[in-house]
Image (cartoon, rainbow, N blue to C red; front, side, top):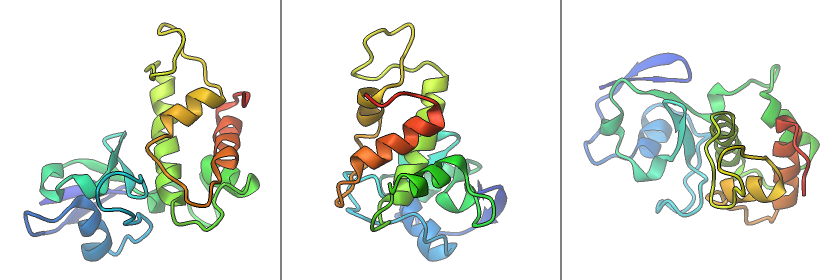
Length: 166
């Protein structure tokens, strides 16, 4: 099967039962995406597939033939950080760092959803979605942080989005 990961085309022949997470980590050596719970409850394995955020532990790799997949390794480099990576550092939103790749990939997807005007469960106005602390927290609720860096994560995302933290 073929798919594009971080801009490069890859061909792999995984077991049909292998999750996308396992193929990324074990077949392709992309270990930035973390295995937290392996049940879709923590968000540590969040990647972007065709621009939409998904839990890589919950989807079979074979379902992603010809898809465009973006992992934390494809967002930026040590020399050229993605704005969200830089903001997470500035606001100490990474603490132990285990959940950070999933948090950042989820935040990238969330900001894209906001740009498209997609409302969430806490959006007061479905026509004009306003990004504030409550909106960010709701949209990031699928990503857990055992270090409780949530206020710092919200601050980092708000800075990149140009929003006020409420």
